[in-house]
Structures are given as C-alpha cells and as structure tokens.
Image: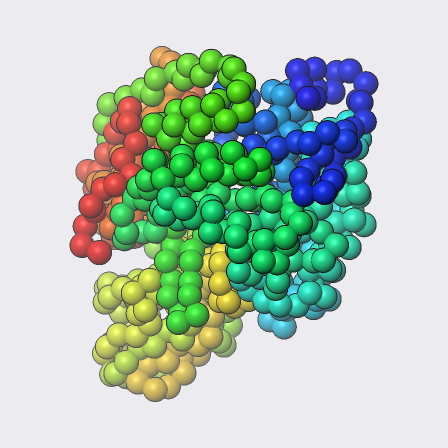
Length: 598
C-alpha cells in the first residue's frame, strides 16, 4: 500500500484495474473497503484527523465528491485554495495510507446545492443541464479539464492514491441517454483520467440505463432490511454476471429535511449487510462514513415528479459512523468490529477527539434593519431570477408600486423557495414552496408599495426538477389576475454582513443581530439558534448555516478552527426577528428538536 511518505519521495507507479470478477492492484486481488467524506464539508484543519478515523475503522480507501459550484463560483473563476484544495485532500489521504475513489461529477447529487452545478449556468434560459446540449457540455468539459489539472497527476498510475474515477452519477435514475454518459466518459479521458479505473454507479435496477458496456458498474443501495445487500447484488448479477461486484454507495444512514425528524437507522442491520458484503469478497464504499456539514447556503433539496420540495438542513450528520463533528458513534465501533473480523487485520487504535466546549449565552445587542441596508436595485419590467442578476445564494427582494387598486389573489408563479409578502411595509403573509404554497389573498390601494422578499432555501439536487431550478420568482407575479410590472429588484447575497449599519436601536422583522464574545481557548461547539425564527448565522464573518424554528436542527456545528482566541463575532439574520435574542454554545449537538409547528 502507498502510505506514510506521501509525495516527499519519488512517486512509484502502480496499476489498478478489473481482472475477472474483481479489482486488482498491481495484478493482485484488491477488495476496496471505502467510506465517503467530502473535503468541502470538513474544515481543512480537520482533514488529517478525519482520515485517521477512517483508517482506524478499518477502511483502506476514501471516496470523495468534487463540487463544481465551489470550484467555479463565477464563469472562468477557479478556486482550488483553502477548503477547496482537493489535491491537498487527496495527498493527505495518501499520507494516511488510504486510497481514493474520486467522484468528479459534473453532477453529484449529495444533498448539495443544485447537485454541485454552479447556478450561473441557469442565466442562459435555453440551457439543458445533464444532457449533450453544447451550452452545458462546453462548461462541463472545461470544469473537468481544470479538475484534471489538479487530480490527474494523483492517479494510481502516476504514483498517487486515486484508484477509481466515477463517470457521471446515478444517471439511470434520471434518463437513458447513453450518448450523454459517453460524452462525460470522453471528457474525463480527455482531462487525463487514464491512469485509474473508470466506472459508473447506479441503483441496481437502473444499471441498464446509466451504465456503459465498456466500464464496470457499481451499485448504490441501502435500506434497513437485513438482506438488502444480498438482494441488490442478485439484481446486479442479472445485468453483470461476471462482475466486478462493487457496492459504490452503501447507505449507512440518511439525511434530514426541514420539518422532518432526524434520521435514525438500524446499526445491527447495517452492520449485518456490511458483514455479508465483505464475506463475499465484494468491494464497498460506505455512504457516508462521515457526513460533515453543508456550511453556509450549500444544502440541497429533494423533489419528486409530483412537484414536492424538501430542503435539507445544514447538518449532514447522516447518522453516519463518524458524526457531524468527527466523533465516533456506536455505528463506528460496530462497523470497525465487522471489518476487523472479516479482514483478519489488527486495526490502529481509535484516535482521541478533543471534547467540545460550552460558550455562555452571547447576547446580540446590536441590530441592523434589512430595509435600511438595501443595495442599489436593478430595474426591470418583469421579475428576474437570482441567476438573471448574477446572484447564486441568499435572498432577493422584489418591489413595485401598485398602478391601480387591486383586491384578489396574489400569485407568485414558480416561487423558489420561501417568500414574505409586505403590503406598504406591513407583513401580510408568507408562502412556502415546501408546503406547495404560491398564492394568498391581498388587498392593496393605488400607489401602495408591494415588497416580496424571497429566500433561496436550496436548489433541488435530485430528480427531474433539476433543469428548472432557478431561484427567486422564476416566472411572473399576478394580482387579481393581472401581471404586475415595473419592478425594483434588490440582490441580497449577504456576503458582507459586517458592513451593515448596526446600532442598539430596537429592530423587529427582517433584521440582522450582532453580538461578540471572548474565548481563552477554542474548541468545537454547537450554537443554539432556538431563540430565532428563520434565517442564517455568521460566525466571524463566514456563513455557518441556516436557522429555521420548525426543526429538526436546533444547533449549528461551529468547528474549533472557525473560532479565535480573543474576540469572536456572531451575526444572525432573522426574517421575523426581535431584540433580546442570544446564542449559546453547547457541548453536544441538537439535531432532533421538535421545533415550532411544522
């Protein structure tokens, strides 16, 4: 195994390929025992710690997605620095004695904002993502080229740890266009991914639609049934009787939606399925080994073909073996025991994790009204989406004055995703895509001002709604059957909350609240947001995550590296705020809170 020295020594070239019904490393049978974690969901300062935890559970490989939207936030602007330094993450995996399975996308799902696609693609209203449309494939190829510059040198054939590279992602659950999957395959080869084994991944029943005949097919599945692995591989063998047999995602947990309950899955059944897979000699990747956090605005959402909308919480704890903050769970030790028994290997000791800290309640004594801190607007006859005004995340405000009195139904045609409606400065109601709401009764006089404040709660990352996931009001606004025109549109990405004009003057409604606290020593903590209604929290200027009092997430994970010795600052934006709120740092997570009425 390549380990320890990383790239300090001259790289030794190895080979990884399919031989018969199994994978082979340097010509010898190799069983991939992997677990997934995502570098952008883990503070860079903790990468080594999390990788050591993977090694101590018995994993020999780490599986990782790359998120296009973080690497190219604007067209042609590339970021592979800081927490986006994927090459460094891969090098650190090698230093810890781990191989790597790379899932480069361009589509990744992953309960991540728009499945990893950058929102600026949607500025072109004619684009068809996840297809051979040149408007999509051009930027997608360029992204893979840039990723190849970072990671192709780190393939196993070049002395690096990358042994497998995935082509597209579960395409069989989306479509049957094999020409498109072949185009992604070719783009990866053109980007230099030729010194590792390429493969596809789909649900067992979707293998015929999403796979390519020239590549091995992994299967993704989970479920609480004790024999779910047996059944899944039986299905794969109908299509690929000769293997190799690779469970490319074993769902050892699940994710949480706002307004639902925190996922709890069966440790015994999951350990039983893992045991069965390993005993057959099959390869496996546990999804997730460690979920981490969808910091800031990066959560995704689910949608079905009937138009549902289920936005995910900020935490990506996933009920995984390693919890959101990197602490081992009962599942971790159960899986560790299975891997040790089935491989006959003596495993490294489980590393100690520094205890989380408590922070006394921080009173947010300063406030700034959103309405008094608006930027210059864009003027437009019709409403525009966030993408139309070159905005990706946050909020957007639509303002117009009524040319005539109107009484009737206000309809926000294709609302994405949550809106507060103000009639002449007074909150008149809220509309929530999650609850399939897009209309309300409204009476307004001539000359009165209508304000519609819209939140992007997270673009859908899975399902056939994907191509139309513009944010804001994405079609039109009507009142009493008439289209409203003449809009002032305020882009509110909220990227500079420290520049707001704060004071101790009371502020209610859509307001920012600020407070500070001092620390002698830093450590992980969990910031209790239950004093607030709906919005976002920033820690030392960086967006930590979302707040919503419907639960289940009550506290946001604040990693120790995000805190500072000395003065720290918290800012909360609350759509229905009031003075007097505070934020307390707890030493335990709170992911299963009942919240307010759903």
